[in-house]
Amino acid sequence: MHELILGGARSGKSAYAEALATDSGLAVTMVVTAEARDGEMAARIERHRASRPAHWPVVEAPLHLASALRDAAAADRFIVVDCLTLWLSNLLMDMDDAPGAALPEAFVRERTALLDALSALPGHIALVSNEVGSGVVPMGRLSRVFVDEAGRLHQALARVCPRVTLVTAGLPLALKRP
Image 1: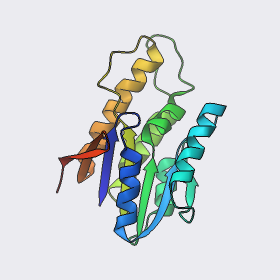
Image 2: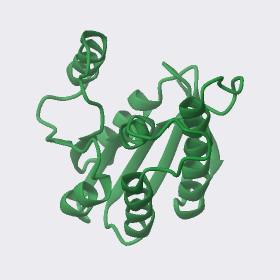
Image 3: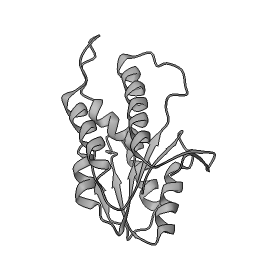
Image 4: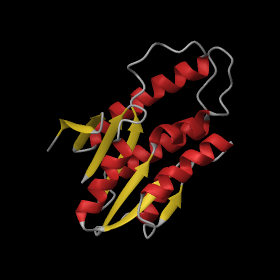
């Protein structure tokens, strides 16, 4: 079963995904997408690392998420991907800021690879992502493209995931169930 778990910053979405993984009774693998590019991000990564069981293997996939999932997925495994919006940021970082500039080829390729691979992957996969479309329209082009592409990615994943959950204030709200 594959599930898209959405929520705002500090909404409890990662804790919810980790609880699902723990409760599943399956072997758990964390697939993480963050890169510690500064001290603040390094501290965030360390807080997440400290909050989950130390025996869970961690796969770092800042760019090639579909490949990492294909390698890690198994019928008897629960994978938590945390998080898709950081992965999206990593892929969009090198985008040309010129008006009308095309999306980076790596982004288009990796997004397509993820969407193509997901439905064929065995086991349980929880995809954690920030819901960023509820705020104001950002001022900069890169920020606007990020919000647009996050929304498009979430819609595409919601079509292929049998379960979609929104987490707010630590409370899960089922948006889609089989």
